[in-house]
Length: 51
Image 1 (cartoon, rainbow, N blue to C red):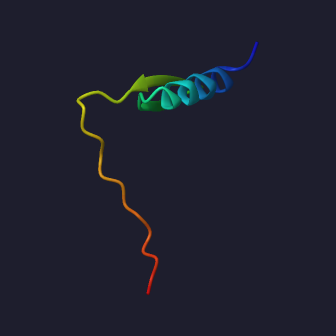
Image 2 (image 1 turned 45 degrees about the vertical axis):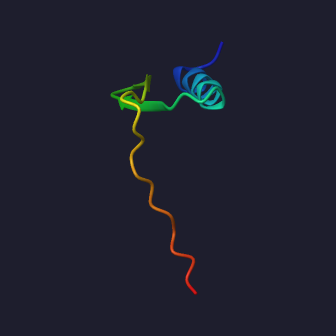
């Protein structure tokens, strides 16, 4: 049996592999797994590659 962090990270990886976007919430002494809802993903900034 793992810690809550171990379990949440494994579950988050499985959800991500299935195309579901997990969100991890850190609370005092614990971590909770959630799902990104609403259909729209937040914009991701890509690093400037220079050029």
